[in-house]
Length: 152
Image 1: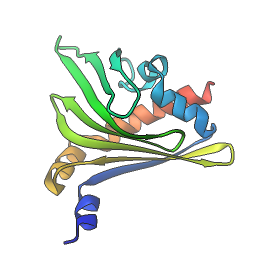
Image 2: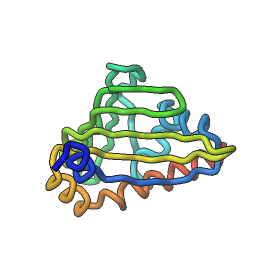
Image 3: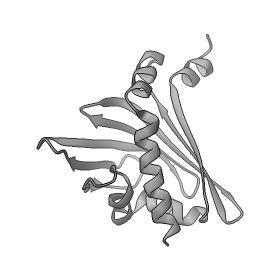
């Protein structure tokens, strides 16, 4: 199996078209005041602890859980191309660790074609994450993102 097939088998992908232009969708990804409105599931509070939006910069978001524990999302920005892509290493403790998030933005007129890839270390890990609710979880977050960008 080639490396490209390996990566494909380890990747979960969501495609979405947002009605607003890419600048608005991009800003929702990079501004903490917007991130807190869509990153967490509906009804959950999110705190942006760190958000150094530059290559090599760290980010950390914390969400208190109903059982009193914290769900921690954190990582490091690996690649940023304004209005085109954000690639980051990410951990979602305690559930998911050592993944790469790829947010790809493509302008199409006044709309934004958006592709979200999560690359896992192995195909098995990818399948496990899918079974744990990857598409429901991120799908819900992107519905909240859509509401946010449509309100701008």
